Amino acid sequence: MKIAVLPGDGIGPEVTREAVRVIEALDLGIAMDEALVGGCAYKAKGHPLPAETLDLARASDAILFGAVGDPDCDALERHLRPEQAILGLRKELTLFANLRPAKVFAGLESHSALRPEVAGAIDLLIVRELNGDVYFGEKGFRQNAKGEREGYDIMSYSESEVRRIAHVAFRAAMGRGKRLCSVDKANVLETSQLWRDVIVEVAKDYPQVELEHMYVDNAAMQLVRAPGKFDVVVTGNLFGDILSDQASMCVGSIGLLASASLGERQTAHGTFGLYEPIHGSAPDIAGKGLANPMATILSAAMLLRHSLGLAQAADRIEAAVAAVLADGVLGGDLGGTAGTAEIGDAVLAKL
Ligand code: NAI
Ligand code: MG
Picture 1 (cartoon, rainbow, N blue to C red):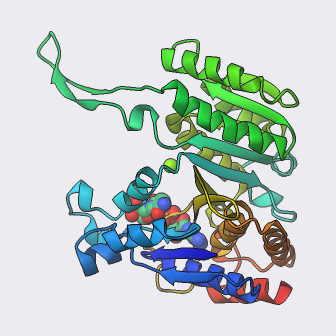
Picture 2 (tube, protein in one colour):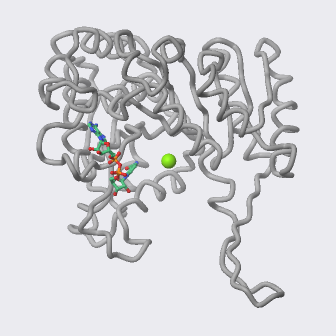
């Protein structure tokens, strides 16, 4: 079993170090190789996603990713910016399914932007399509009939693109509460009509899953009004981008939220994927040992579960994280004083 470790920029290396310590402590016989990605890769190699980094990623069972983003690179052309590295990895490796679990840890209900009793009921998984939609359609500027400048971005989804994400979502629902909410805008968008048609077709393969369709505007409302009603939510790239950030803030701190980006490639033990905290490189606190590593440690747990078939080890890590949080060992993002290494030590002690 081999993991490519791509720490990246800013707090990326700090939080990744703690996740690596946790994996090592479990003594699972996993090889971990590191490579440069993002601004540090641009500075050392002239490109944010060097060929050797992509090669290492391809030769591994999974990728543990920190964060990219470096203020020194702000003036660079778009294709050389650090953030292009994560987009490039998702596209090059066909990682089309972004899984973002959102759950409130016991004792942290009051850290949500929602009332504690509403927040406490949240236990949902957003499955966001990552390789299609308006982000990857034809785009540009043109002149309209009135001679005005006009910007356009074509939104499209093919049946196969929807089908593959639908299967991921239905399978996820089978492993959880067996309820799936498909979010679209089928009342106005043809893309959404096709999305809905395919979801309904795929649903026939999963008769045990209770399927519901919801318009995205209503979904945004329901996520705040009654988030506890959701189990698995599946949606396209644009709607998922917005709803998953919204869901994360319903839970509380950005320093606690993990994610997995999966494709179809199977490894010897599971599905190849990239795992990262949802936060960025946080240049404001980088190098100070203040970053909360929990999101990355929880991403490592997802990696062990989905890519390496080590569900028990993943459960152990998640239980240790929950126990540390219940003890009140909190980082600055949660109003506490514990530093990055101190939080890592506390998780190791629980393990
Ligand atoms: P950010 O997530 O890096 O930071 C937002 C705020 O949250 C900051 O105040 C930061 O200090 C705090 N924060 C983030 N993670 C934390 C942690 N683990 N512990 C404690 N506090 C934490 O987002 P921002 O500032 O918008 O972006 C900074 C850079 O990161 C930009 O270059 C951006 O493009 C990049 N970025 C990269 C992502 C990725 O690598 N996947 C995702 C999001 C942003
Ligand atoms: Mg976003």
